[in-house]
Amino acid sequence: MKYEVINKNNALTYVSDEDIRQAFDSKEPFKREIVRAMGLTNNEDYLPYLYQALYDESFIIRLDAAQSIFMINAEKGLSELKKRNEAIDDSELETEPSEKANLLARIMRIEKGVEGIKEYILSDDGYDIVKYCCITYYGCGYRYHEEDVELLWFVMDCFLNKEKKWMKDLSYQEYREFIYFGLESIWLAGRESDILNKVSEELNQKIYHMITRVMNQKPTTDMKELIAEISKYMKEPYAMKILALLKHHVSGDAKREYKKSLKKWNITEEEL
Image (tube, rainbow, N blue to C red; front, top):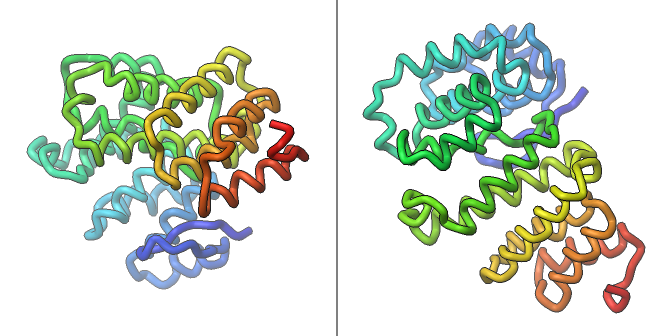
């Protein structure tokens, strides 16, 4: 089997099961694409190799190893994630990006679940940088459930409301990046599974209203592109509403994805 992953240059590449086996035999440090591909296999036999990669010299390899452990079997890998976290001084939380913040976000998701993440985000205690990382574990290969989509909506809604001081204190760029990441995570939920077509009517309505609010904040072309792609995976009535929001407001890559979504739903722009 082949897995679509990104390499050290953030370029898409493909890794096969044979590539992973050869990487074991080579005795060389794992390349980024190998570490990420292991996370997509759901093969628990790879966990010991990923535990070792948590201590790699490369920061990005360590982050990817933590993510791959989280995706293969988060509960089984919890003790190793906590061990790595304890080896990092708290002062590292003052740097960006922070390995410890990413680890703590994953550990919290495993131990306290969705409700624990919500409580932490709205708490006046804890580290702001950890709160910012609280949905960074969503990505390609993650096995989404309705509670994950509901969490993504909840966090996005909080950000759009700027409910907490730490949200208000973010720079304009940080705020926009978080909104983009939230949209990307919802898009991945649709691309990776049929979960967006299965969630409740209430949650579909919440996602639509959240996207309406994003559209009212002068979203970037990249954001509009994600919104167009999200519409492909929503239930049809909500997909139509989202496409209507985009009508006459897209250009470039966003317009290309908008047209693809129209084609997917077998509808013309005039019919919206």
